[in-house]
Amino acid sequence: GVQVSSVTPEYFPVEFHRTMAEFHVGVGDPTSAGGAFLLINQLEPRYAADRGFIDFAFDIYRSYRAVLSEEAGRAFLVEVGEALAPSVSTGNTAIADSLAVYAIRDETRAQLAPGFQAWEARDMDGVIDFFEPLLDSADLDDGQRIIAMELVAISYFSFADRAKAETVFRRIFEVDPDFDLETHSEAVFGLYGLELYTDEMMTFFGALTP
Image 1 (cartoon, one colour):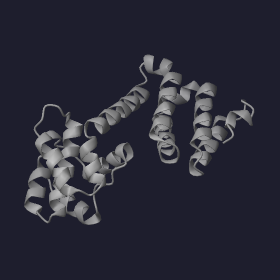
Image 2 (cartoon, one colour):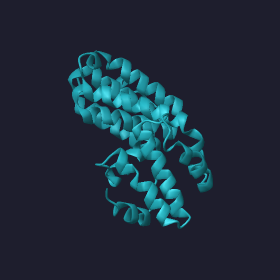
Image 3 (cartoon, one colour):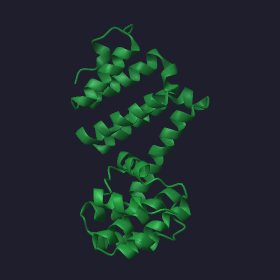
């Protein structure tokens, strides 16, 4: 697509470029959206302190991933990280946290790839075989362990073994007593593209408490 910066003068309001970036995401042109995003940072570096601005970078990343490839999306985030590096060095936690989340996501996908592949193939036996031995593994951090517990619990639920599903799911509260199912589900979908729960599952697991 045509880069926004090549057809609009740089003195145009930042809001114009933000709107154009959103438009390009909407029509499936992540390259132009990414160009507009980076131009915003050039014009108004203070926007880098806005958490919503950084979250929008990940919307563009997801567009790259859907339209082009995972590698293209990753290259865009690397470019964003380099462009915003001065803000990171001055303690911009919004940027640092978001880039850290991306790094965690990438590491988790690599480490748990066989289990994710089994999940995407709806091979619930494979999900249990891969993830259940990892539930007590020191190789997983807390976030990875929670995802593993969720996938095992959901797999048992799919086999109509609700007792085992509940037992495994309740272990999540040992890791995170404040675990919120709806919030976590949205985060997992945003990071990994995994839609974990049906409405029936949300009702069942959402009723469980520590």
